[in-house]
Amino acid sequence: MSIAKRRPFIPAGLAFGGALHSAIAWLNQKRMKANPVSLDCLYRVFEADWYAQKAETGMNSVLRKIKS
Image 1 (tube, one colour):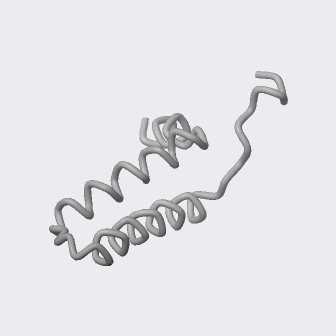
Image 2: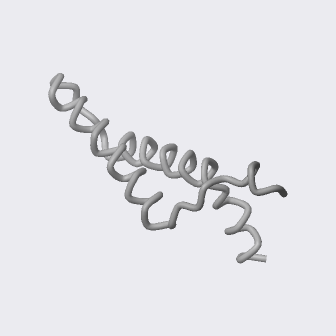
């Protein structure tokens, strides 16, 4: 893979923190509008953000290699 096509390196902690921050921001938006949010719903939002962070940084392929 050429250097131009590589994704920028983002440490796992930064990606995790970004996903967590995004989920908490979403929760606060809902709370400001007085919309109740279940813990399960918040978890699903976090999980989707975490997946997006991993996909954006290419972490999924790295994690698959480590597990196998």
